Image (tube, rainbow, N blue to C red; front, side, top):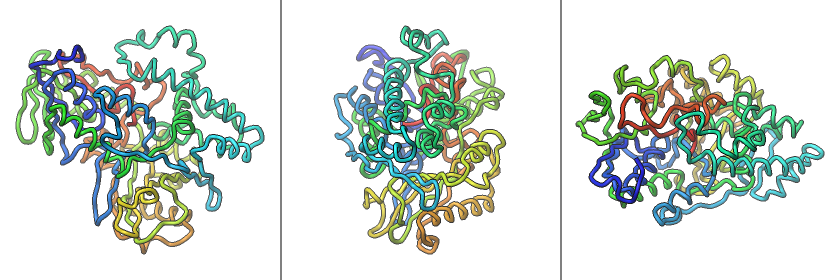
Length: 479
């Protein structure tokens, strides 16, 4: 749909979904001269990055890591703007903390040399190996940005550029990251530091290509940042940008059917009205859009296709407000106290509620007290779990109580009596709020055969003016 500055003049595009991909696409389309209308199911923009407010606490409901600041700068530069025109960011130092046991933890610094020293203290020679590992990660990142990230793959032949053909072996596409990291480091703790981010790609170290070790460049070189006010401030900035370009938003408009005649989509039916369009861009859940909104003759990917895909995990999200500070946790804290491969097996190999599990804590009040009442602590505790699990009230309560117990373990003191706000968000909530297929939190996992050209197409093969964007498509999961 892109073209010259006024290629879209007189044509209307309806974008369904106001998540990050919908917001970004709406602005880019408006810049090209299209009339853009965004229909959003929920009451506010953000998609999975919505803001939840309760009892005076402010929670980022989904993503909480602001990484790859260069990507945000590049996006805003398309409009002669900068991120700081809309929100402010600060670099976190330490970037995050990882627990391997109650009193066994490491802090990853914003200072790369400090991390080299940390690795060396854990394993002789590991400091220099970290330099090499991150050097290769930086090469992969450069290749990803310049060869993969902004490319629309329509066939497998689009994947094979001169660079990928001549230097493809250096990208380690056909090796999983668990095996790859093991070639550098023997200490399991060090490997976990380098592999934890695979969870946020919807995979495990065993099923994610080593290409994604590029995230170590993001982690150690580009740094971990925080947008003041939370990720919601980024959403608000992108919404304001879109509105300044003439984009219209209609909230509380859930799309219930896509009306197709022949090979053209003619109307979008919502719970409130019907809207005509020259083209439609779906930023909603891809599987839901195909299975539930289109009749079978118009579906590029029918339900049997989705049943065979490797879905990214769902999650148990606890939105917790504490009276007083929580000790021993930083803005970002991860706990890998238990056998994390058993946890991954309970997600991907034999889906079940895990008996022992790793978890992640975001405590933004360590950086930004404004997101909680005075003297209080805002926290999101996240446990990855398999998608499509039974999600009854008793299971949610039991699992959440166990998670709080593990948090108390690293905090070193009782916390339950100081919880003054508590909300559980899990499988059925992802389905209800976002029409998430099987209750997935992230969409389609980044396995080898679900990366780049192998992800679902941006264009419908059955409807000429229907397009897709978001976490199921290339480049995939994440901001």
